[in-house]
Image (tube, rainbow, N blue to C red; front, side, top):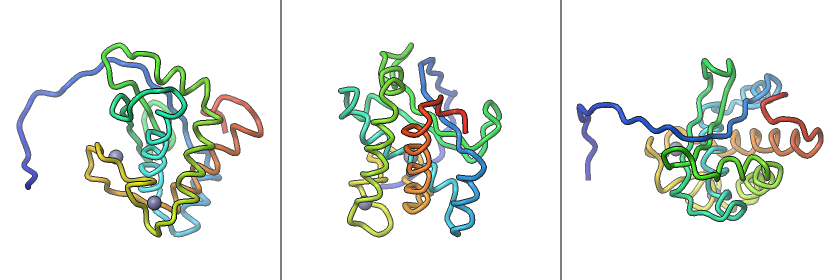
Length: 161
Ligand SMILES: [Zn+2]
Ligand SMILES: [Zn+2]
């Protein structure tokens, strides 16, 4: 019905997360295609959260996410997916162990969706804290393609390009 700025103390949540960064060449591919990097990271984050319940057996509301075009701790574009419970309940750890499958399913979900610019079946999230803005479906497909490709070919830690 409306949005209003509130003056409240910050909330703190200590939990566990998995994260991955985007290598330069994947960033260049998104930018060269005229797509929105922040929208792609955000869409990829939503897609990963959407498919995680199938792999780790949970509800999507048990998981939170954060994506940014630059994070000071990683020095690169980064997507975080975290347990939405104090101290963590093992979901991010389980998803990390299954990440090639999680990333592959997320990639297929967005790539094969019948929509044109993103929809609730692929990159829109019912619990997004940013009103599903920005989102860029083509950039999300590109980012998830890169992640799934790196995981299936190298099997290395996803933070390493
Ligand atoms: Zn869609
Ligand atoms: Zn969001």
